[in-house]
Image (tube, rainbow, N blue to C red; front, side, top):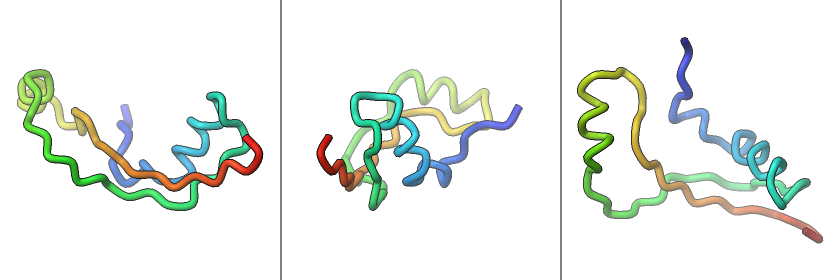
Length: 69
């Protein structure tokens, strides 16, 4: 199975998610990782030992042009 890669968390990914929410037509103009100090969670610590995929919380900062939405 192919897992989602962190570099796939791009504008297109978030536009698709926003399009299925209350913001259809929203345009994501910028995506960057948000540097928020967070300690490891119990779930991500335990899971990271057994799986080879990204697990956890990945805070992102988005700039969105939502026009008239």
